[in-house]
Image 1 (cartoon, rainbow, N blue to C red):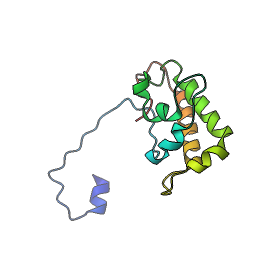
Image 2 (cartoon, helix red, strand yellow):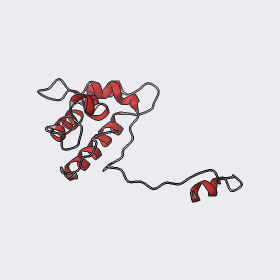
Image 3 (cartoon, helix red, strand yellow):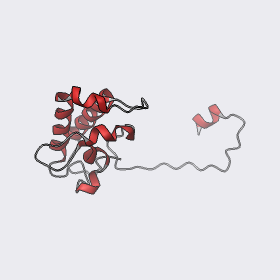
Amino acid sequence: MEEVRSHFPDADLSHISVYEYEDEDFWQGNITHNMNKMASEVPIENTELTLYDLLWRPDEHSFATAGSKGYREYVLKGYIYLRTHKEELLPLNPDNGWGNYDQLLAFTLDFFQHLIAADDDFEIYASR
């Protein structure tokens, strides 16, 4: 509310309610969906999965939590593929300039680092 008041000092905020809540998120990240084409071209070794499946659609592939069997290892395999296939993936950068290879690489690494730090006992969603 303080931030709203600072930007809109004359606004009537009497009808706005503020709620505090807890969720089970252990990490929050943001990557444009424009990177879906590139992520879809990153195969996960010995599976039918791609990095897109892992980052954008984990629940559709039986990965409901960060501790789901194989999930961390698959994300690592996707990251390694990204690192070792840069030149073939660069042409898949979005034409509109929203997102690029380096951002997908950094996002995947940051996400993986949080996955390995996560406690398996928590029921936490792998991606949102």
